[in-house]
Length: 328
Image (cartoon, rainbow, N blue to C red; front, side, top):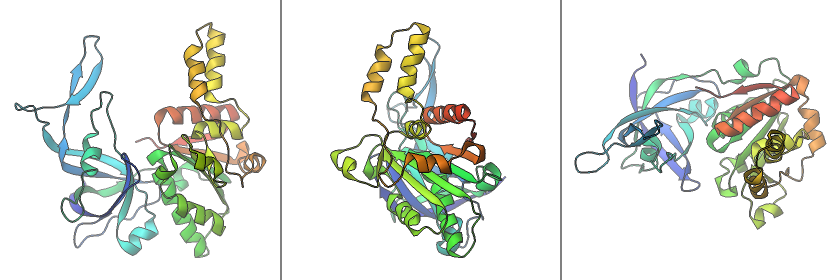
């Protein structure tokens, strides 16, 4: 069993109330194990608010805060694995691992046990994070995308983490004369522009053209300013993918499915009314992306919201594209 070590958070940046990045330095006198982009490591905090299972009258299982005799939340250790957002060259040079995290919430507003503790971190005061001194995972380019000429990465929210690690390492390698002649496309979506972590860095990598790379950023809740930004797309990642491959929006398809089953379509129509029509950044064309993403030579790798990943798989299966997802 891998040993536990004590790391220190040296940087914590919030993009919104529920999204943040932080850098973790290894235990004094140690270094993190070597890793490949796409892998993950288990983190732990000792002061997490614990939960307990509760079965409701209908037999459904729920998790609620576990309270002590004074009605205060019980605290204890919780361990959870996180994809690494830093690239291996950054860790080798600077020592840290970087993470892109979301403040999780349960069905009844119960805060995520470990994520809520991470969001309470205070560098130089309460900055300790325990880590399992082992990095693992097979969601890597050599395992998931070997032999394909085109790789489409689709990351929603913090699902971007393994892909930003891949792209940064590819950029570093290309800058040092090492390329694999593969075409890479990254679709990254979040709710708002402010929540698009790594956005500027990814724009700069795409603009440098050191390796074949298209960056497709998008927001699902665009503002007036977002509509004016020529470098920003709109819509959820799965609907952008449907748009690229000339398929109806998921909400449109759900209306069609409900009609075919003879069911009421009012809820599906209301969902369609709320849906933002997908649009690519203005410097990218659908035809160009279709050429890059030839189904016969493309693999899709996705990480993020489970419902979104399921729809991406549906699109991939419909278009006969190889599909892989982060699943540990």
